[in-house]
Image (tube, rainbow, N blue to C red; front, side, top):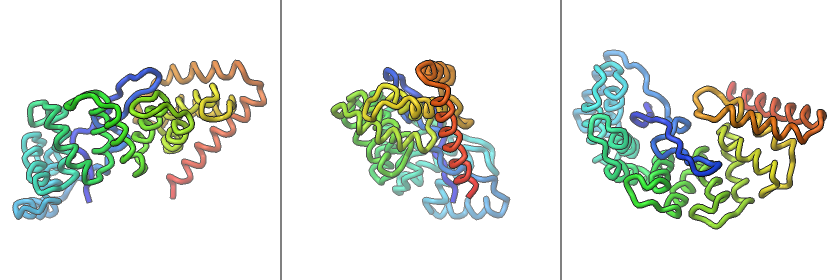
Amino acid sequence: MMRKVAGTVALFVTTGLLVVHGAGGEQATIPQKPQQPDKATLAELCARAERSEAEAQFNLGQMYDEGLGVPQDATQAVAWFRKAAEQGHAEAQASLGMTYLLGRGVPKDAAQAVTWFRKAAEQGLAYAQLILGGAYAEGRGVPKDAAQAVTWFRKAAEQGLADAQYNLGGAYAEGRGVPKDAAQAVAWLRKAAEQGVPDAQFVLGQMYDKGLGVPQDVIEAYKWVSLAATPPPGFYYAKEQFAKFRDQIAEKMTLAQIAEAKKRAREWTEAVERRQKK
């Protein structure tokens, strides 16, 4: 099945040392991109959509959104997303929310975006929960409400969504919507860091460097900040800032400690690559 939120983008909202991920759609959470259909597949999809099959309507909306098999047409994409969304199709609801957030095929309307993201989020769609949490964190389309932001980040984080785990860890680290709790911050930041989110790796490294929520450990600090400074393609990140902090940590370390930290970072990367090959 085709899975993609229409018009996903990356938007990062500065909040001190931490950033909120997902307020405008998060590239780390993009579901599978639809494939170019052949003529027979497209014809069948159109027929099913005309018969009011919600999944087909959603998929046809994606075709128009991407220009796959049909001319790219944001207005047509919105029309088909709406038909599926009004039947309760969660991913279509999220895609329709995104069109309102970005102003693609409809005028920008943050309140309408929130309305549709909420419908999808209430059905348990993790990336809609993440974006709804981001809306509350920013006050975009809804009154700013840190506690509500945490509620939705937690729902998505508990489903394993890395950016939501990062946001929840940041909330505990800074006391946004929850009491400050360094141990809880580390627990959620670690989950996101293990999934490869560079910002989470960087902040986790800071926690180790300062001994917040974990025993102070410059080797683990260097390892995580080093990983953050060399993330995989497709991530928005402050590479120079991360590398500078890594070098500051190194000034406090022996050569043997630096070698051990680099070894741990290398082993982590190799383990990830092995999992990806399976």
